Length: 336
Image 1 (cartoon, rainbow, N blue to C red):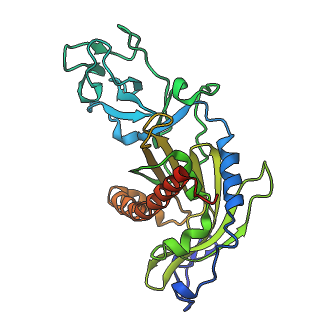
Image 2 (image 1 turned 45 degrees about the vertical axis):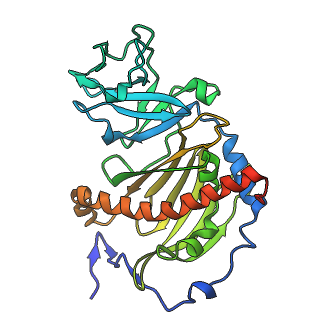
Image 3 (image 1 turned 120 degrees about the vertical axis):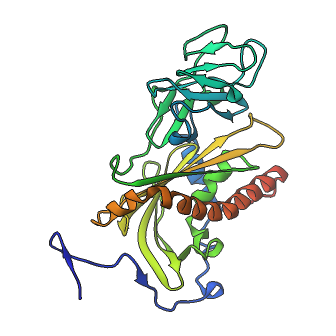
């Protein structure tokens, strides 16, 4: 017997999938996944401005009163911490005195104190140390590195539109691969591989719409997320690339509409490095208009590890895809 909530008939979030073709019997997608189309989508994304902003990690990983957080971006050591009021601070991760790694230092009353000789940094220029512009969007922290980016700087990064603050459950997964950011972005701009490469997560995938021009760059995909056995969650999702190192998947219809998965590719090594490394920082912000979703928000500490585990399984495969792409590009044999 169905229920009504707010005048609407209640429907279960899960669907029982009809028996469909097995993995080998599903319709091939290689003709639709045209190398030139994917390459053009990548080129279009690469031409968009980033303002020299790079995603460093999860906002909750840089805690007030906690230890400093370090990351190498484009070959540059960066250190982040919070002041005693919770404001984010960032700058070079190398102490200007004798080169100590500031990521291993301590924060005392909001001041970063070098553990070699006690140089105290409050986020202001001192002794040759100059801060970097930094932005905390509530889920991720960004740092602006003008020498690494080489573009016209902007005051803020291009943060994708997300569900209203406090309405969703957010978590961040990070992994590192031996490839360049473009290889990660190209992977995400190829939706056709989903049900072939990740059959444990995606079934019945069909690209409903390809990009229609320079201004309209969205891939629209109908897909079912596999939960267990024949239980699935069918949705329509849109993939866009708002800047060179970011691809956003937004659920536009179905369960969890407005939820987003942001994939950010941050270079760890400098340009032309013989063995480039890229960090995949993926933020998932899940939302739902179901009344019961308040329970999911309350259970966020339990859900976050589960979401990260799911992302980890997908990226174990997708980083192999990106690394393979980089390796073939290095030999000149990549077809795209």
